Image 1: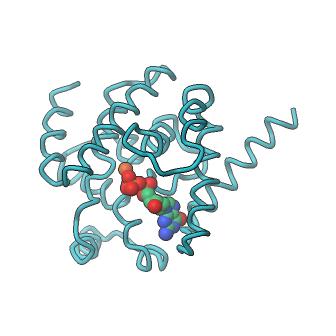
Image 2: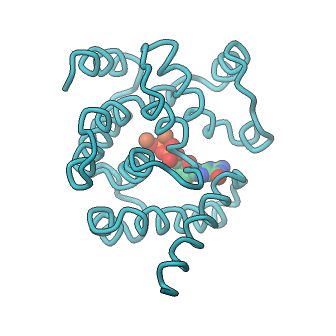
Image 3: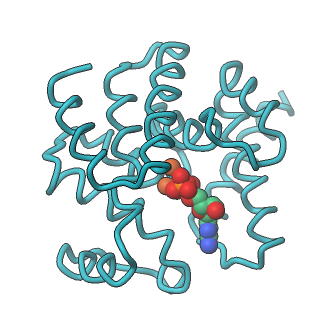
Length: 196
Ligand code: DGI
Ligand code: FE
Ligand code: FE
């Protein structure tokens, strides 16, 4: 781990509750493992994992104030479901508060909740690590998705998005258009592969 990452890890520990910090470490180590599997930079994956939920424990009213301060535009869905805001806000804090300059690391933080069509390898690694880290135990198909993540990351991403949309439907939660777009994009990619 670089000195920069070590310092950021200490700072993030201070702004998260115990359980969230444990989850954060789980994501960082899982992301590092996935980076090893796919030949990506292990430290950047670890750093993105450490940062991904850095805005998670900020109270909603403060989240809204910070979005105003940093001119972060919020959609209707984000206003209706403010827990969605922590990813966008986390990316901005990553830059402004933690001094991270690596645009790809910041982008992996920004899209870790909804994903986005055409994610980079690092973005897919964080998106997936967030879902499969060892501390998670409630999602269906976890055993299968955990294995799949180390076999074919794109297939794992597609499954996670499908299961997330099913979960949101049963909980009657508003769906962020980006989650929907991302799911459709990855489904169409897997159709391309299977029709070959
Ligand atoms: O922050 P974490 O809990 O570690 O994980 P996360 O950032 O992926 O957030 C997980 C929650 O976000 C999970 O309960 C599903 C929810 N989520 C993902 N996409 C959407 C969404 N919630 C809403 N309302 N709409 C979405 O499109
Ligand atoms: Fe999150
Ligand atoms: Fe998370």
